Length: 317
Image 1 (cartoon, rainbow, N blue to C red):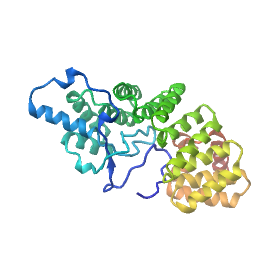
Image 2 (tube, rainbow, N blue to C red; image 1 turned 90 degrees about the vertical axis):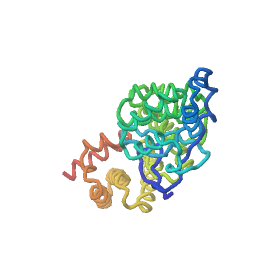
Image 3 (tube, rainbow, N blue to C red; image 1 turned 180 degrees about the vertical axis):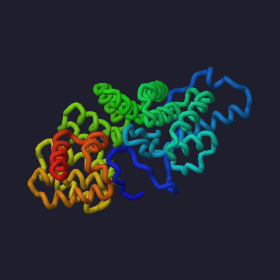
C-alpha cells in the first residue's frame, strides 16, 4: 500500500485489490450464551451463523467520513480479500460500507444482527456506519454493546471515543482511547483519536505526544505527521512545524491541506512570497481552502493556526 495523505481519518482506504483483515469474534469475545447456541436446530441456519461467527466481520481499514471517521473492525490476523468473505450478506454489507452507501450498510448489518445478535464485530461495524450517518448516540450504543461482548478488543473503544467526541463528551472519549490503547498499545488510530480530543480540550502537549506516537506506529499516514506539526505551531515552535510540513509537501505535492498549513505558518513568520505560493498550491487543488468558513468547518487545526490562516486569507482578499 502506498503511503497515504488523508489527515482526518483513523485508517485509510486500501486499493480495491489489496488484502483486507478479518478475525474471528472469538478472539476477543466471551463465550456465547446457551440460548444463542441452541436457538435453532435447522442445519442450514446453524451453518449460516457459524460462517458469520468464523468470519466475524471482514473489516476494511478505511475512512468513513471526514466528520466522523469510524473504523470497521480490523484485527491483525488472518488477511483475506473482501471477495473471499463467504457469507453473501456480510460481504454485501461490507461492500456497501466501503462504497459509501452507509444507509444501506446500516440496514444490512441490522438484518445480520437479527440472525447473530451476539456478534461483537457486527455491532461494531453497524456503529461505524452510523458514525458516518451522524447518528452519534445510536453509534455509541452499538459500540457499547460490542464492548460488552468483546471487552478486550480495541476498535469498539476507539470508535466509541469518536462518537463521544462528536457529542462533546470529552472525558469519556479520552477514557475510551486509553482503554483501546490498553487493549492494543500499537493501535495507532486510538493514539490519533486521543490527540484529537486532547486538542479539543486544549491539552496541546498531550496531543503532540499522542500524534507523534500515532505517526511512529503508522509512518505511512502523512496526515498524522501533519497533525503533529499543527500542534507544534500552537506550542510556539513554528520553525519545527514549518520544517516538518515542508518535508510532507515535498513528498506529497498534491496534499492541499499541508500546503495550506504551511502557508499560514510562513505568513506568520513574515515569509509572504513563499506563503502566497503555498496558498496558491492549496487552493488550486481545493478552492474551498481559500475561505475561512470552510477551513473552520473542515480542518481540525488548533486555534493559533486557524488565526494565522484567517489573517492570510483576509489580506489576500
